[in-house]
Length: 95
Image 1 (cartoon, rainbow, N blue to C red):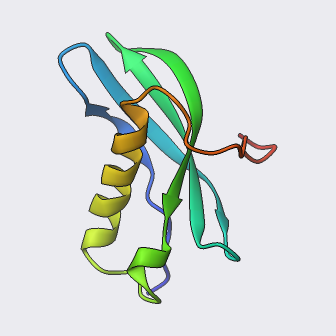
Image 2 (spheres, rainbow, N blue to C red):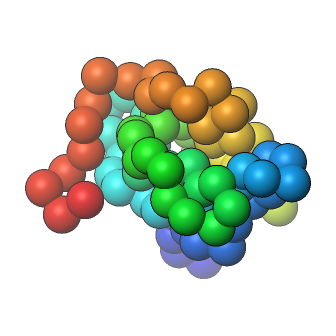
């Protein structure tokens, strides 16, 4: 089975006012880092977007396991709730 990086297009609730979404941007095979463009939403409106770097190295060679999507969501969530990017990378041209 081929792996496709998950998209988080349905809002993930932070609290009653805030939520986030994130779309896959790119993957750096050399460093095993994955990049998502995350957006913070307040009352359903996008407030800010920024890049989030995730770590794929922790999953070894098999990314098809059930916990990969949940762990990526957790990694993104931990960064998004800070309201700031965790990387200097600014995304691909298509973002």
